[in-house]
Length: 449
Image: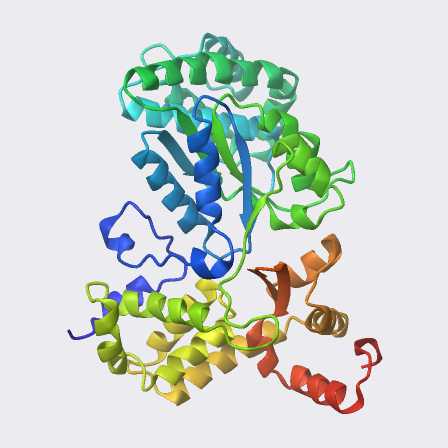
């Protein structure tokens, strides 16, 4: 089976999210739950499946690029297979992530749910919104009449008018904010209540809404001194959690490191901690290689090279892609088990030359990625990185913002719980090698270096 280089290049695009229900994408999907230390999608799914008549609110987070969207689309497919009506959407479709309020999120949910219902011939027009939109139309100077049009179309007119206009968005919020509870009540009773009744008549167990990309809400500071994520998910989290259906929110990872993590759990998660998707382990706490993790990362790359081949065939086809298995493992190790980073490394290799990739190509790609990341690190940040190497822990929101958000360190999970390690590509830098040699020789405390 000859390698199709163009197809392989397309399959390794790090910006593409696999859709579990797409037969072609399904060929590329690798289940990493056995090595990640926890099967979070199973936990999310079982919570919903065991409580079909209840409303549940679950929180999901992780590093950017670690595979959250792919896993959530798998969750959607599995729940649909269990007869739930699932609405998955990327919040960035409706929202300006730098400027979000609670009513914006509620309106986005109402828009996406109503649109999916209408596509399934379930048409509901909440009376509350008919009156609301008549008044909103005056503010936006755009008449919004729901007579003869779908409910989702009315919301689309509002979001389209305000998404790119901060001034109009501010005016609309001043009007909508005092009506948040009314909006929430209408969504729950008029939209969700009627929809769930009709869905059950059609044999569905219930309604599930999965809201992706809210972890990308900008962490800018508001005039109150709170960050935007703190305001949305902690101060107003009780309202977001009151939707009358099963809902899964993605939230910014930084909230897990916040002093108010416990408040977040109580207000949004019903006392349950957010589910954090860790990296695929390439090394263990003691520094030894994690053979199982590396093996699954190999599978991820070879599946994209030969999607119609079996695992046994991949071994025979490997020489078409890499000069040796060692070179593939080299990329897996320096990626740190960060799925998007590994795909990006292979993508860069294909940009430089046709497979099979030589050691020179592999090393050049690694050097470029290493130097690009290292340029951003100042002396204080290096000290924090060295502390993580020593203690395998990250404490507090400041260290999170400095280290994890910049992908200087990664989080892993094993039988002992969570632990943190340096992004392996940074161990290739001279700064790290010099520190390691000095620390080993003198046994000095990291703060003295």
